[in-house]
Picture 1 (cartoon, helix red, strand yellow):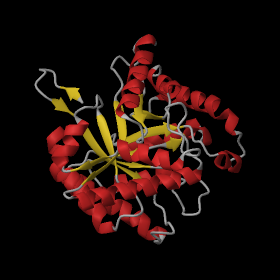
Picture 2 (cartoon, helix red, strand yellow):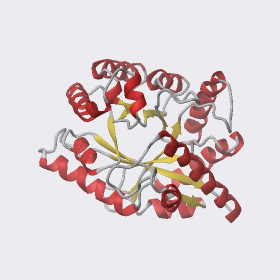
Picture 3 (cartoon, one colour):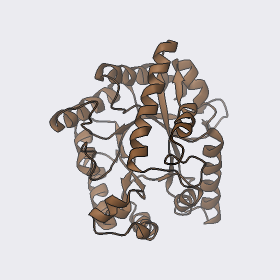
Picture 4 (cartoon, one colour):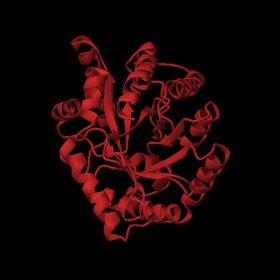
Length: 320
């Protein structure tokens, strides 16, 4: 949370994510429909007062997981007037940083600085191979890309992290921190400390403490049955990531070796309950932005649009 200048209350922005634009085996749809629904969801989020909508990138997966976030972001931005649209995250080592910077600057010029560039390293060897790159080079490429973008400052920027080195990487460049969604509060707090300490040690680049964002599996539910259904959706969505080969670096969650135990950890970190209960849990976090991870492929569309509406009409006002 963020205490206001007079110490009278706390303030937190609420976004929603992650829109991946997939057509999965359990929820097949045309890609025309997927991208049309992105625009519809962006319009709905703006209408109910949600701060931002965030997109996610992968390459070469069977379901068409979005490989090109900047055009998708442009589609959502063009459908709205005030909603922030961000990448959560764009896989920077797979991209040309100069091109990304130019595109981000263009989006912000066209759409009143409503585009936020979130960047991460990637973790799937096959994605690097497909681009003719060696995954062993990802840290070097990430650092070089961040240096380029930090110098150019094409707009608000965030670094997605699952480890302390990544948190320090963002902090020392004065870039925002975006914490992965599956970690305990203790791990989240420790990553925030690493980020802020690195910023201070680097001489406070930018002059203003960079923001902290937290991706959190979150759902507003009124009954125990609804709560259990939402948690099942969370578990199922992370099984997909286990299949992609995702495993957190040094934060105690190893998806590949201990799938069931990891799913229990994911479930324990989820925030599911009434809007009041969700707001009470969020108040414990020292972050500026929470991205409610609701973009699972299992829920029916009616459930997704309902939770977007409830986040905007019930939750946002409690934490704003």
